[in-house]
Length: 137
Ligand SMILES: [Zn+2]
Picture 1 (cartoon, rainbow, N blue to C red):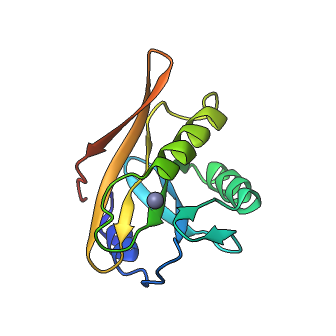
Picture 2 (picture 1 turned 90 degrees about the horizontal axis):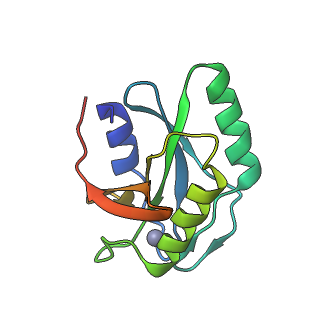
């Protein structure tokens, strides 16, 4: 992940109890971030705005940027993947099975505190989610 993107995520505002989300793109490393907006935000869960999502990834594709994941914020003391997150990650993985890399990244951002990286991949027909390290470039 580029340092610039890391700082952009880290500095997001705390708007608890609502979750904020956004899309991530990469060349060699994660180097693009599009904040999601007009999304239906409910307490304790994040649902991407599909129209903005498809628009963003098609513009990126024309510029040689590949979609590689979705981030969302949590409030403090929620530094893990929730059941709702698992459902959402599995849905995204299924939706994008044929279009993208096998592995996608789903960082959880606790604004101004920390970023915890989770990566999802396919294993024997199931979606696996593992915590991973963030390498800054
Ligand atoms: Zn969550």
